[in-house]
Length: 259
Ligand SMILES: Nc1ncnc2c1ncn2[C@@H]1O[C@H](COP(=O)(O)OP(=O)(O)OP(=O)(O)O)[C@@H](O)[C@H]1O
Image 1 (tube, rainbow, N blue to C red):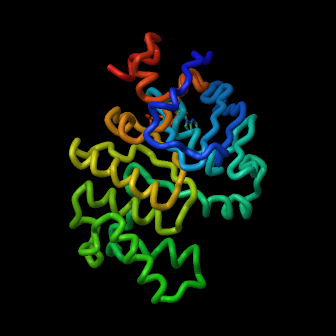
Image 2: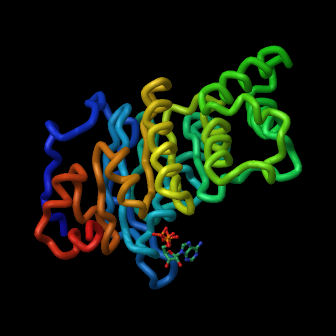
Image 3: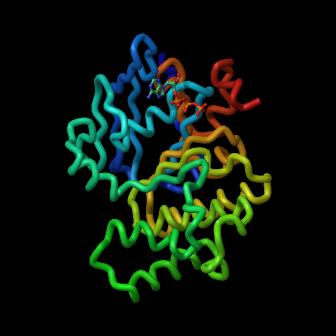
């Protein structure tokens, strides 16, 4: 069921460009008898931030894994820049993934590497033709972006939660992805630091013109960064609208997320 809650464009923080970068059509995914995605459709426009809300176990991570081809859906299409991810072989998937960055909830930095080495790692792995000079410049820019140039030679264990999140964001952005998928970017951070991360995400999204799908339970984060909010419920896109539109909804299934 779709409640037909429609986005009010006037409420949006910025105007995403209308051609979609991701189009998901009638996605179905089950594990045995456990039906996770029943008939899920969603379109994400260029430079748009779409937040996916949903209860624990609703299938948010399954959805993200389908988009990056880590899980094969049973039915449906996922077009990323017009190409269907569900029909790709491993080589094509690897190429498609270079356009998609992923910010893990746990940051996924290597504990045994310095901050600089963590940032160099994806460059050396994916862009093998880059020289040391070029890599050095890109690492410097990445650290400047997140205001942490002084941490270059530090180990992850020496950094606070907010700093780790900034470095993880810098590492995600260093490969210049056109789409970023965020898994709970502010979970575990205090409200002030969380707000700074929200602001950084918005600033860098504007600078690099990225489009995003964000999984979040943090309603401040949702309010701060969502152009549009999707409610994933019963395997479908149950509601679709701006934060303000959904917050005012009288539907208890929507309302419970905005208490
Ligand atoms: N590889 C798998 N094999 C079997 N079941 C799976 C697999 N991956 C996910 N599931 C099931 O799919 C359902 C949705 O999981 P998912 O991780 O997407 O939830 P979620 O909405 O991200 O929850 P949370 O907010 O708690 O992270 C769960 O019931 C989970 O057990």
